[in-house]
Length: 161
Image (cartoon, rainbow, N blue to C red; front, side):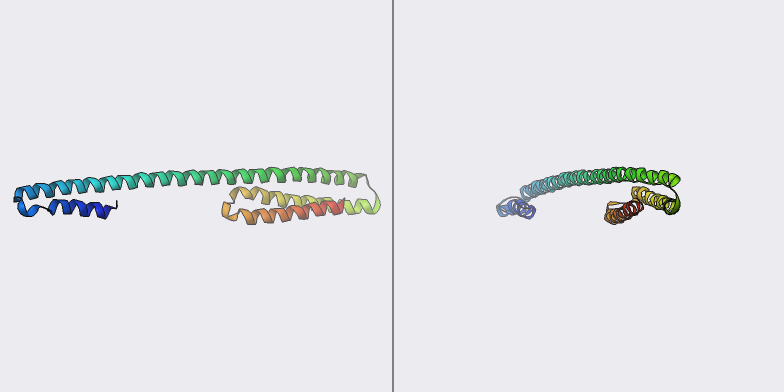
């Protein structure tokens, strides 16, 4: 039953039959109706407050879960990229060793290429560390940018090999 229906029934009950009752009886019945109305309003307010608290708890739980999922996603990505970066570092180290033992054009080419690859790698690592400051709103753009930079670094290492 809606709140307005309850209020109407309480007031109607208090007023009905007031014509053949004394003023004090009517006043007493109106007082009872007001008390009942106040109790109904308090109960409705308590029920609404309980529902609101339940909704707040549910929302906070969902927010916490989403934030934890985002942190896990970011850490999983960082771990995957770090593994790829370790493999690239190994390849660059091999190129550096090859440059030291090579002669002629190969030595000249590798001696110029390896430092450029290391600079490109260092720039990528700097950008990778910046993802700690990315929020869920900026994550997609940051991930896309890092994926592109990593692909370019891989391609540069493969070309040099």
